Image 1 (tube, helix red, strand yellow):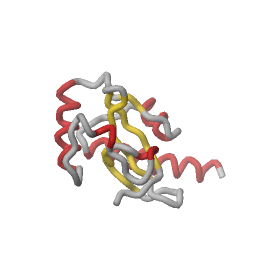
Image 2: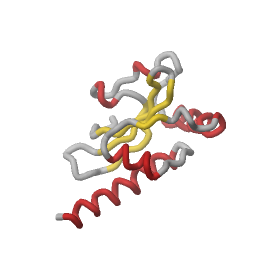
Image 3: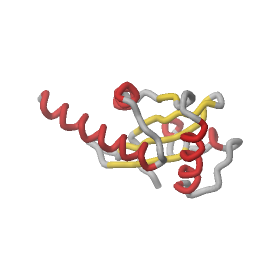
Length: 118
């Protein structure tokens, strides 16, 4: 049983890293741990150049026109999965796991949810 847990955590780590890489961001081990526990992580300490690149790539990934004004209102399927979907992958859960980017109180965050991207 212990080995099975380790395998699923390793897969999640690799997939989370892929999602961050997709939008030009790096992720620390402590941030990975928080996302695996389904906690949101703040990106407010990131440099402006890193976040600028992320915003450009997020805009390119988005299927609709998103502005800073309407970003917190973006909602796909549920309140738990609001924001711009960054990356989705199959997981052990019935629904795929997905990384979402959003602004909370004007600060950029990333969260993980088990929701499908449509």
